Amino acid sequence: MRDAVAPAPRSGEASLDRLRLLARLWDDLVRVPVLGRRIGLDALIGLVPGLGDVAGALVASWGLVVAARLRAPASVLGRMLLNIGTDALLGAIPLLGDLFDIGWKAQRRNVALLERWLATPAHAERRSTLVLVAVAAGLAGTLVFAIWVAVRIVGWLLGLA
Image (cartoon, rainbow, N blue to C red):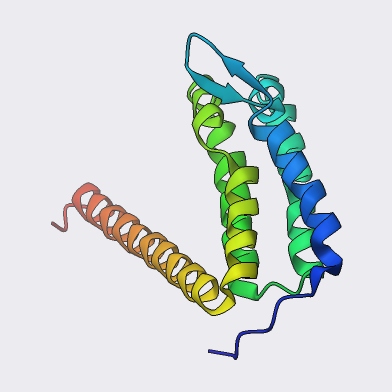
């Protein structure tokens, strides 16, 4: 594992403040009394099939640019990308995705991750690496299981089982 890179000095504070504002607009713009939760433009725009989730991913990508400019390590950038991808992929599911958008606040998660990295770079980098390794292991396990099931089905169809 490479040495933790010291975060950029306060010169990036203005960019981080703009990213915080974007997270508030995108994830927490208005309070919905019936739900007792806050929703933002992400949940509202996400109601437009296809377009809303693509727009959300594009807007969230700006946070990656800010993080890269602040010299965040690859593990933190990867974890931010994972948050964005999760939001875009699961948010694209009709109806369920719209409910998911209310609870999964990718912008807010990414701002918090970036702030944690700025406060304790080594700890945030280590945790991000662990999350990415766990996700990769889960995906690999799912792939192996899917291949095993496919082989069993083909064997059954061919009468080999």
